[in-house]
Every structure is written in C-alpha cells, then in structure tokens.
Length: 84
Ligand code: SF4
Image (cartoon, rainbow, N blue to C red; front, side, top):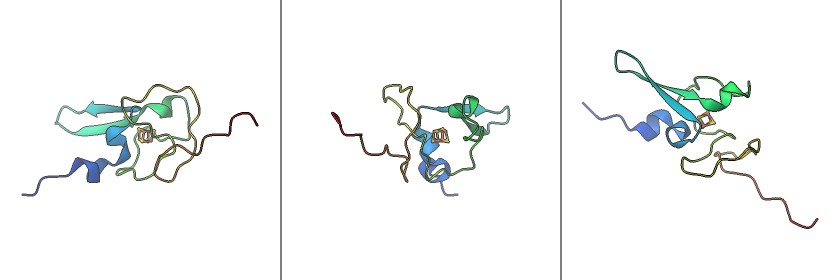
C-alpha cells in the first residue's frame, strides 16, 4: 500500500499558521481554518487539497492583524511603495 503524501492531500493548510488540526476518535484528521471564525469568506473546513488561498501564512511567520492580500499561490502581494 502506497503512503499518502500529506502535502498532496492537504495542500497549503498543512503549513498554515491559521489551521487547527482536529482529530476524531477514529483517528481521522480534519483541518479547521482559524480564519473562518472571524471571516465568513473562509470555510470552516476547507475542501482539500487547498492549492490557492489568499489567507495563507506560513507557520512561524509573525502574526499579522492585516487582512490577507491576494496571491494566486497564497503568497503575499506586492508591498506598497513607501513615501507615496
Ligand atoms: S487561511 Fe487558507 S491555507 Fe490557512 S488554514 Fe485557512 S484555508 Fe487553509
């Protein structure tokens, strides 16, 4: 039996600082999006794998209170120019 690649099965949520892994009594894992608690634009339990998400922030990244900026692969958008 082939092992399941979690990166392929879960996608961005696997490494997102906003995810909460919920384990069932039967050993199943569910990935709950923490952003869904304050932003109805995010599903509580995203359909996996998540390949693109503008709310994605890697684990270990400093917390931001900023709303997410769009990026096709979850990457932050361009920084605004300073002094303009
Ligand atoms: S913000 Fe996006 S990548 Fe992060 S847990 Fe929610 S759905 Fe997944």
